[in-house]
Length: 222
Image (cartoon, rainbow, N blue to C red):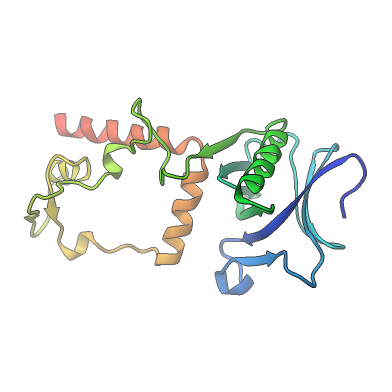
């Protein structure tokens, strides 16, 4: 499917997910490079188009020029993860690069990331870190994302809670065993996981988390 004057990389696996769609009942649609099937290929064409194809079938495409606001790209090891927001909708894509070894696959993924950087930013994440760093201490998540009160028996909270007590709980200054009313989430587990993935792919998310923590600490002073 790739035209002339393009760079191509072989993929081991390609997945796509469109939130709110009926495709695969909300599950990822995954394409794999297996024997008996055409090669799975990522192409970046000089016109600024990124294409993912398998043989003569075009699986997905993204126009990269001027897309930095709508397309977020994240590299994790030998995978590239895309979040695309178009006309109020969004979709996720994940590409795992192929190679004779993990080192070769990582090299190919990094080369593709470098090419993508000609069009838009690409964030990276160390394999040993599950969350992006947000402070001067490397790989340290923000306070409000840490487990609170490790080794401390949580205080049993009943009835309505004040803003101050809830704030102290969320920033880790005290540990509470919250009533059931505070433990309910309207998001099903699968949607919550997807929501978190989308947030973590957004380069502005760490700064947002720190701003939230700052506002919570202001509430303690009121």
